[in-house]
Image (cartoon, rainbow, N blue to C red):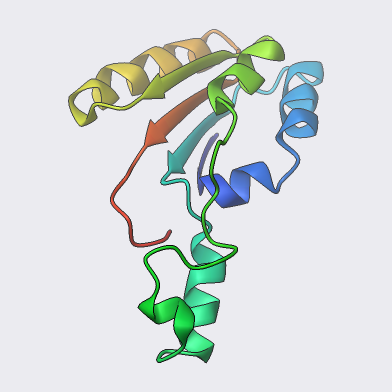
Length: 121
C-alpha cells in the first residue's frame, strides 16, 4: 500500500499513532509526504472566501505556514520503519526505491519530500 499526502494532512493525522499501528500490525505501507511547510487547505479556503482580502496580499498569510516541522522520517524510524528525507529532486528515485525495498521486506517506510515550490497542496 502507498499513501501520498501533504505535510499538513500528515501532521494533523496523528502520525505517532499511525506509525505505531503500522508497526504493531506489521503493515508494509509506504508513506510519501510532500512537504512544502504550508497548510494548503487553509490557504485555498481563505483565498476562495476572500480573494481580494489581506491574506491574498500578504507574503506570509496567518495560519498557513507550518514552520519548524519535525523530521517526519524520524517518526517512522522511531516505530521501527525506514525513513528518508529528500531535498534534491534527483535523489527522489533512489529514495523511493530504498523505501519500496523496505516495504518488500515487510517494513513500513516514509519518504519526506521537501518541496519549497510555494503554491499550497
